[in-house]
Amino acid sequence: MERVIYDNVAEIGIGGYLNIVAVGKPPWSYKKHSGKLERLIIQLGSGKGRFSEVRGIPRSIGCIGNNRFILRREPLSVEKVQELIKEFKFKRGKELYLTNYDSVEYLIKMANYAVSIGIPEVYAVVRIEDIDKITPVEDVRIITELEYSKEHLKKLENYRWAHGALIISTYQQYMELEKIDINFPGEVYVDILYPGSLRKIDFNIIEIKRTLSPSNSKYHDCLAGTLAITADGYALPCPLLRNFIIGDAKKLSLKDILRKKRLKNFWKLTKDKIGMCSSCPFKYICHDCRALEYQASGDPFGMEFCIME
Image (cartoon, rainbow, N blue to C red; front, side, top):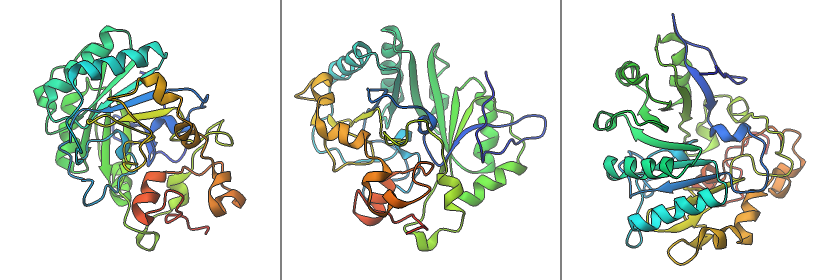
């Protein structure tokens, strides 16, 4: 596996290292966006994660994590989920993330289906509490999700076959990773937990938010190219922007949803269109999680976590 360590990311371990490819932001935030569909995130259930829609989800990479949501109606059928995956293939989509499962068996079934029809990158995000229920699946990129603890990190070494690990931690715990010897060769995404407001931030938020994408002046570094479908069929620009429905996957095809102007507006939501961000000298190197801002301020254009305001 190619070793990739971005700026600000520590190489850790004695006799080994963690291949940390993203801290506080999804890995695609570093990529150049094209204005077309790049990834589809399908939630397969209400979820069993610790963080819930009711109490708040303070996660910086909660979009590909397992949380708990309220389903407003009956979930999509197996056939409909497969139809969406097939449409994604037809649209030449590359990255499929399957998350928020209620059944590990269902998760792996959908992942196997996606691989069988030729989706290039199929990611199945599995809680470390559930990973013993599965066996390695060829061409399915298993990401094991775990909350930071020495016990969980040590357990991670048993799953060296996994493609990656999503480690949920505070900033202080992230810094402690430098002192821990972990032998895990997969990609690692550090999911930094945020407090409720900037007043409680006790780390250098500029360093955590700093990113470099060749297309940030035209496209949103995280939302661009992303479409999420909830377990009950609502299409969203992000799995955590629950109140910003783009369309209904029970009634519309993927092609019809992608035509929605509202979705394209989210993809092109650059800092030039967000309040005081438009005049900020750091606007094109600052990662922008609209979901975190919305949860903290109630405003999708909020700037709760900005020290420059």
